[in-house]
Length: 161
Image 1: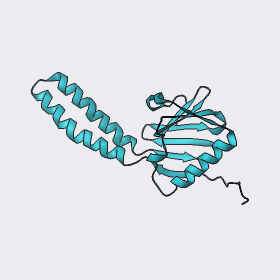
Image 2: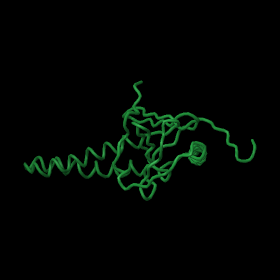
Image 3: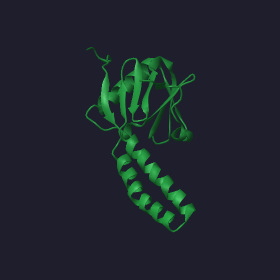
Image 4: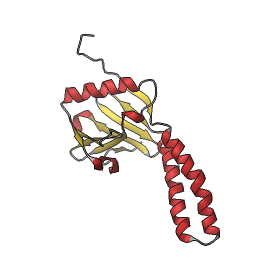
């Protein structure tokens, strides 16, 4: 391999951090009993609030099982909620929040949202960062910083298996 050249391979098994699981468990373990107690004493407002946080905990626990797969042609995010895929040639720019906690791969009418590099764990996370940097430089993609990127959802990228 010559200098400046990178061999591109398919990279898998990069999971979101276990922080999501921990926070989800804490929310679930605290809010579910509190919600049930509020329901018993007929405090419906409290029940609705605490059951909402308990459901958020379940969502965080399920979302912690997400995998990112990056290759020379595509970026794929697999989770309990489905498989989302965007091609590198469809990406126009990459949006991120001020601290790079969220990456939004933005296309013409597509959007793939993944957690930022800080939340990637696994033995191949460094390869994933190198591959992403290589692809971004080869495609000439720009970064855009936006506070609102952390509130975006993936759009038009869901694959039906």
